[in-house]
Length: 284
Image (cartoon, rainbow, N blue to C red; front, side, top):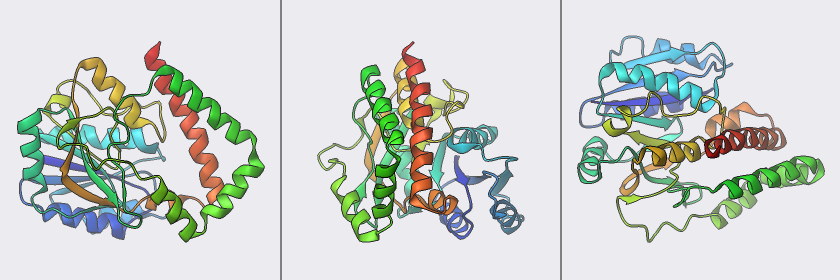
């Protein structure tokens, strides 16, 4: 049994389509949708849409709990079904392999991973998002990154200018292409430090060692960086497997949540600073 957990925020059609594509996969599966208190009533729409589908649970939160807490809720419900794997994925993921479950099984048989990430490609830019980083961050790197983020916040004028130009799709596309990860030469089933959080597979190895995947102290950002540290502390494997592929139509929920790029950027920086502080607590 594989249980797929989708954290939903303000998307309906995308989550409906993703759920239907999961249910069409070969193998034993079910879906848990956690709606993170969407202000556009997406939770109730989804609940009614899947009301008579016994393979789908739709959970509604009482507030927007963020990435970590929202996914942790879905994960805990998933465990009631005694899964071999729990897959946590964004609502803006597109599945392109019908034999996805069999492929996950094959990778686990070979590597006995605790956590696994596939090749995640942003089709609009061609950017490959996994792995985020081969090694974990050091304490000094985190402190330096936090310092740079705080400096950005102080220069509001520069932030507004950057946010203005990010609104132009062609410029943004060119920038994202320049940021492509160099992952072409990474071998299949390679152990890595940090995976991308848009699609993550948790195995029996993880389930028997942890009560929940993410640190509840974070709201958004750096969840996977913290997870990497927790895995290392337990001596468990985080594996990248490019034989499994998904598409990521990036930031649908985040785009819907903000009126403009400037507000979105401020939100991102503030939450990243908070999450880095949580990450640094693991070095104490």
